[in-house]
Figure 1: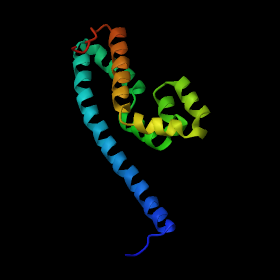
Figure 2: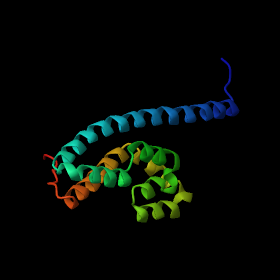
Figure 3: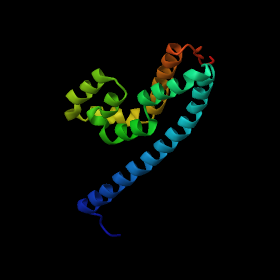
Length: 146
């Protein structure tokens, strides 16, 4: 049986880690796209509560403020150790905490775990943005069913 040296093991791990990251990214991005499609249905319901003349104003306001789940996932996986996804989501305090402790590696690990839940956070933020816009334009915000 051939002996596997340390250098061969390091090379093998060096190849597996990037492949694992790519597979993880593809999986998380597919989840984000599926979730975004479901979230669009809720936006259509919210828009339908507005008068016709306010719907364009809603779309302009909403699209200028909305966050994209795919962007949040990419930032969490690739730059999460620096808190990039937190800054993107408007959570500046948490982003600064990630930056302050990035040298420990803990924020990178936490961000990798958060990559699995960041899509739900983005959808929650987008729903809040949409409800605020609907409220300002005179529509009736629809609250989720419990």
